[in-house]
Amino acid sequence: MCRMALIDQKLTQIAPRTIGRVNTLGLWTLYSREVKRFLNVFTQTLMAPVITTLLFLAVFALALGGLSRTVGGVDYITFLAPGLMMMTMTQNSFANTSSSILIAKVQGNIVDILMPPLAPWEMALGIAAGGITRGLMVGLTVFFAMMLFLPISLAHPLSALWFAINACMMLALLGMLGGIWAQKYDHIAAVTNFIITPLSFLSGTFYSIDRLPDAWVAVAHFNPFFYMIDGFRYGFIGHADGNIIIGAILLPVVNLILWFVTHRLIATGYRLKA
Amino acid sequence: MSDATPDQSDKIVHSEGVRIIAVLRIWTLFYRRGVIRFMRFWVESLLGPMVSTMLFMTVFTLALGPSDEMVPGLSALQFIAPGLTIFVLSQTAFQNVCFMLIIDKQEGVITDVLMAPLSPIELLFGYSLAGIANALLVAILLLGAMTVFTGPMLYDFWVTAFFAISAALFFSMIGIVVGLWSDKWDQFSLVDNFLVLPLGLLSGTFFTLNRIPESWQWLFEANPMFWIISGFRYGITGYGSTESLIWQGGMLIVLTLVAVTCGWALLKRGYKIKA
Image (cartoon, rainbow over all chains, first blue to last red; front, side, top):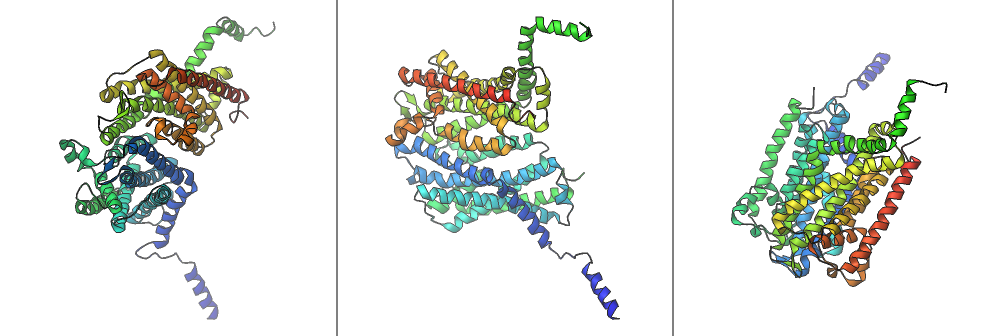
């Protein structure tokens, strides 16, 4: 009897691990993989964007600030700093998820993510969270670096945080869609060059939107980047070009839609599974 | 002559037509590999830099307002346009050559190139000419497109051409050196992000030197990109002094010669490409 009990116990020990409603271990593993992936090359993924952003700030401040120009009631450089921060954050969130999926597809190690018992939503969440983490880390580093040179103050920290997280999530999800859709590096480079960069450049990072001709102001209001940057900047300087409430609601709604699409694509295995 | 094989006749043709063949070799590497490659990827190699530069111009127009004068007689946009053009030209020359070399090394295609009867100097120009061609093409297209913002400008064609070609040559040589040195993309992006980009942005593309505190000005004046941009801007707009033009041009020639020698020496040694 004693023997039997021992064997029984051993059998339960080597039984397949049961997974609850959420595969927490799997999700955590995927997330840490995503984070380690970009931390491994932190000079490219953290330092390079920080340096580039500071250079942009210096260049624009030198080129435009000398005229003691004010925008929206603050110094031009104070106006510019949050916009640049947001631009870098979004670009990095997008770059992280898109490159992660695309490289995995090209190298073939996407099966390592598809094979484990991860539900489509867990896979989407793990990868998206990696992108959001990179965006926020870059943003935070730029923030501290800028504090060395500029008197940066936060008028509404919670607003800044809300817009930062939502913006990073949107771009992380867009990056996933891009990474799933793309089959070559060219494709994702084209999306970055011709969609993401123009949208973020022409969003009011560098100028107040009332600089635009009237017809274009309406167009600018259809650019989600405008709401991200405007809302984020509101968190810093307490002044917004557009309606802050619209942005605060619009971004999560867009995120929900994007989340739904991403989830569908992963669930159906579009361009991921043979 | 014991080995009167069919090879013999080939050798005779070779020695007779050696001059034509030398040109043919460079042409093959330059045109068949380089130019066809960048024309095939014209969306990235031509359209990409053009779109981002035009975006910059748009952003500056909106941020500055069209009436701002950067220096007497030149609007801010007219001041920035040549600087941006030559900066994009330099970056394109560097990136194109670097990309070609690194991809060839990673895919192992480099052995095909090394096996071919090409001398180091032919290799050097075979690889760099395509980058130079790509860079000059981008610059010409950009100057054309920028007339939308600035109106047509050209002050001195020869000065413009000299600085454009020297810059393309210099940066394609940097591309050769960095491309040979890089085992992975990390090294390439290290140089791109922490050397080429800062040199280009902190060079007077977007502002005049008198915006800088006097104690820092020497730092900008020591930047080769500053010489290139000042010279090119003189050629396009006539802004600047001929005196500084001469020493900037002279320094650029010296530097380019040094870079060519470095590239040639590395290829001759087969640095990181031959066992």
